[in-house]
Image 1 (cartoon, one colour):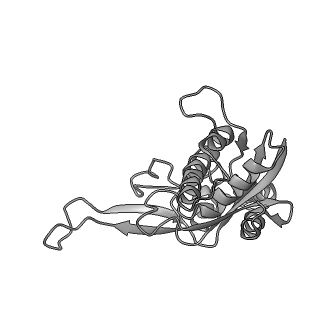
Image 2 (tube, rainbow, N blue to C red):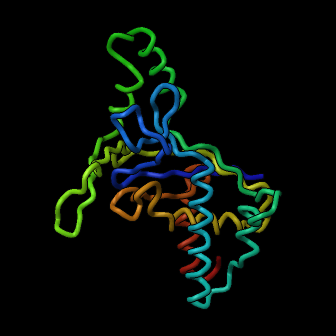
Image 3 (spheres, rainbow, N blue to C red):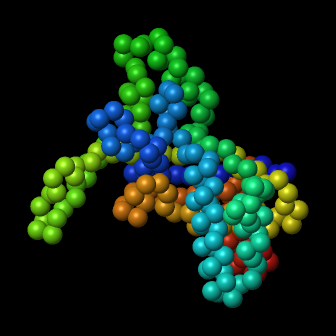
Length: 220
């Protein structure tokens, strides 16, 4: 069992949607914890990484590079429809130094309740946007105005990624490439939101870049 670190940095406004609005003022909101700190849900990340892994496999196959196969994807993420999970175990991704920041937020919420609220903490890390639908005549459709709250660019999330068994480091290399290939996440990721940079680390070693370098040398 080997533990790695996944880091995701937002390059644009990113909507890691909760599927719910914040009262009647916001139609689409992000996910955040009880003090107002945003996070990247592990389950959602795993789905995106699996999708990215399939893309990597397709690119390699199209290029005639036969390093990985479908069975490796199933080993890493689990076979679709099977009750057995894969070898990859992910945590929710949090902002750096999360526990310390969270404690300070809890203190501020308690000691300065007249100044600090969950909403204040959320707003410090997000931006509001409004969207409307336009008809064929270029006129806004009635009742189509929607408000959303998105995480600001240059926000970093990080968390552990454990691979239960990988003696040849093949799954590690596949995950490293999938992480690098994952460039868009969240709601409306094909509409200008959710551009990210993602990498896999072992301590301070950038495994995503290391794997690319090995591939260039033909030894991966």
